[in-house]
Structures are given as structure tokens and as C-alpha cells.
Length: 109
Image (cartoon, rainbow, N blue to C red; front, side, top):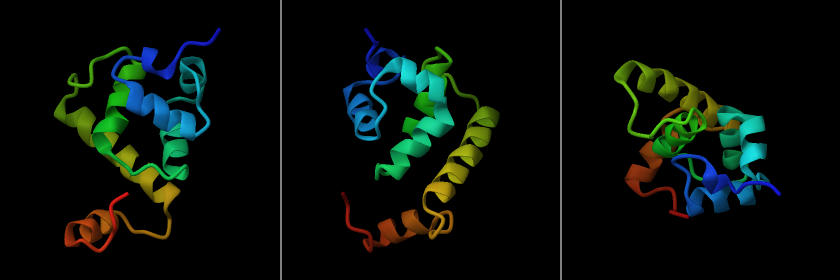
């Protein structure tokens, strides 16, 4: 029997449901993919990018609380996160979606 995604530290029912929609239905499958590939699958499945969710996933897979993040590591993770977003939506330059969203141009899902 496989373990639920929510067994991984920092991941709860909402993330478990999001990963299920992306075709990742177990903690073992998530661990096998790794944080970047799994988060990329979330984005490809239409989930809205959220930096805190990304770094909570990265730290959770390391067995660390999501609050255990220093400034240097946060900057490195932000660069990885931005690259993942760009790969998932190459038609949108970095920062464009958040700028359009702030202006109310992008409808909320």
C-alpha cells in the first residue's frame, strides 16, 4: 500500500489533491520525481504558481519544516521556482503574470 502525499512534512490535503490532479497520487511517487519535476507537473496541470508552496515542498522532501529557510537558500529556491514557471509557461516572461494579476487583467481561478 502506498503512503498518501500528505504524509510528507509540510504537505496537507490541498497539496495532496493538487498532486492527484497532476497524476501524482502517492508520497513514493512524489519522492521519486523530486521537488522540481513534481512541481513542474503541478504547473503543467494548471495549478497556479505559488512560491511558498514550492519551497514548502522542497523542504518537506528534506524532512524540514517550511519555516526553516534562510535568506541565501530562499534566493536560490526563488531562482529555481522562476525557472520552473518559465518552463511551464514559456509564452510569459517572468513577472508578467503577477503584474497582470495585480492590475486585475488575469481572472482568478
